[in-house]
Image (cartoon, rainbow, N blue to C red):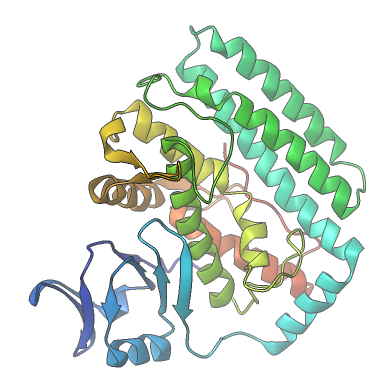
Length: 343
């Protein structure tokens, strides 16, 4: 349960990865720049023009190391996985629950409770950190409204009703996101959630980090023997990792939103690191992208106490723990799925 799976992110354009002995070697312009033992790697994520040798891909598949290819802006392209581990009976039970709308709603409800509770924590921490600002009143009002929506989740709701509660709470939360930006306010203005393409630097960073988080949750599901494509809140759609997106809801505010706000408020990212293309989309340059990837990895190394298990662990391990807790619930070893709530 405490094995920490590390992810190797390769962002340098033109990099080539190959197998050398029991290690992966990263070469740039035919010069070896990095060598890591495969035993220390849980996953490899290649962003942009990054290539891998067939021998390395085969070794990774055999060792259960997922290799993911994404665009340099974080959009998922493809993944190479070996034989899916886990118990076939677990997957059959997952499919049965997904086909049962009431059972799906019970698990979806837990994921949404985790998401709303973590929204509330992010906002309360912002009030604590910036208590003197006039924005604290607006943020506190949103916290109270999210509190009321959390109470409505005590009732038995359908999937559509759950989506309505989640959508309203998310709208409330994002309505005060600009109040959580206290430095570089003129350079980083959140204009409402948008993507494909993102229309401002904040959305560009959110979308990029959500893509990395989705990749982590997909790996966590597969590592536990779950089918990452079959979700409960996110219903089946070709190409969509529904279950990974379900579990990701709890982590969006904790891992990504908090990280993006910190990068801005600590001035680790600057407006000059973003450019607008002719279509109005906002893209980040390579330096900014590397800064965000490094900060994302550092964020996952932060230590927390898991609220359900009461054990200390890194934040990056929690998605794997949550996937295992869901698997335990589906096997009938626990009565309900306990969502991750950040304190």
